[in-house]
Length: 621
Image 1: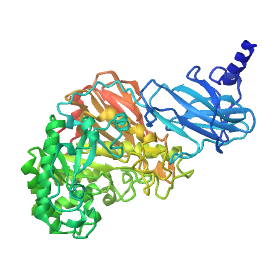
Image 2: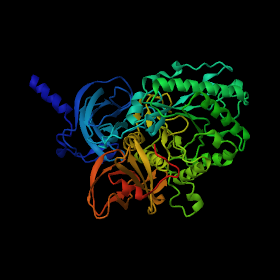
Image 3: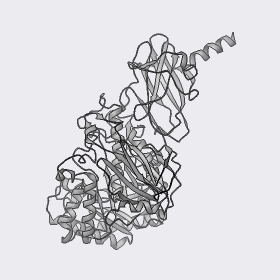
Image 4: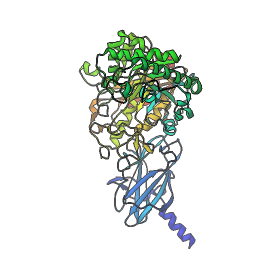
């Protein structure tokens, strides 16, 4: 009898991984998929009564830190909760960021609320989305927070095989993030080294003048405990008592008491020096950002704008010998350039050590507006507005302002298509695919055109600005900066690969003599290691918006990786960081480029440098 019951239990839990060939297609949400999978990669290891509830199917990826991002090679547990009205089977499927099936199967479930845990090893890195429906009763996975109905997502972090770069200084790291300031788990999994720390006067003196005393204990406990995470110190924001507008956090006017404001900045310099000496002694300089998207509220032109910098710059330098003061953080590189050109000769250039910009390239930064969207436009004036051109022109203006300045990018993000709302079917595989690959392309362009550091915007889904998160918020249906229980979108895993591939590099430059629709930038690992060339294709004809973004359109391109007459192999990493080996002949490797970037890893530094145009004034990391 015991043996009989054990046999029944095995039959109940057995998945199509062991007998897929004898089963009919698996139907999920009305779509039939072949019931063929690699044996042994997914197993059910438990089934138990589930909680009360009204939703037909729920799914949760088992995680101990609420990130749902796992090291390469990890077996991931997915708990399916079913509430079938009669005994049936659950058809399940796991797809990658392109929507291609990577795992599929079915298991039996009884009537009533039941939890069944499926354990899967994905075999590769990237974004994955589980879906399911009941053979009798249909249904799909219920929506949770901003994660749309039909999926439960998770990510596998890449094992790129790249050698580790060698950092002479910690501030050679290149990636920052807005959102998740206090979440070490998420920041480390994405590969983030920089976040923004508040030192505005509205932070230090919210209620009145001369009320702030520098103290090393003022450091946020998170920074004190996680010194791998460095600070971009934000200074904009004037309290109501010192604001000409009376607003609590005024970022767009000169303070009423400019002298006291300057004295406060001297105290911030002291505070930063104390923190630097105790927590960041190997960091070369301390980075400050004075204003934030000034064109939003500053009168233009305004002599007060320069006066603000003239109050900040000397006072910070008077108390912090490592102060590095940056402006102006326009919303677009063109906006930042315009401020340098408008105010540079009247005192702005003398009152900054470097430049910071935001990386948006138009007012509707979304998949329907890719950073290279002007590439096919016949009008040169329209093409000039593309992100690469804006960055190129900004660096040229910086050379006129002060030669060879550092350039940071402290905010850039991609939304969903304009008009899409949370909780709608428009947030489908194709939308998420486009959102993710553009996140990579935007940041590659920013670094490739000469930004030392780039900040992603935003961590979790953002309320009111739909889609600007790299993660679904599972606790807030309309998103929230406070989200910590999250699940990755494709963009999160794209960015996790990007940091592992391009952090610890110097920018070599944009590939020269590229044909139409092909984009490419070369980088080199510190101090003089592997060459990494990022490439992709963009054609407006197959990127038409409204959720129509071709994943398959491709163009051939031969990349020179070695001297003429040589042959060998290079490593090619996909956008999720999965490596493959490709042969090259006569010094060239032939690629079929799509909208999704790839990274070619090679060794010939001289060949790489001969084939690029370096950003003007970029002096390395």
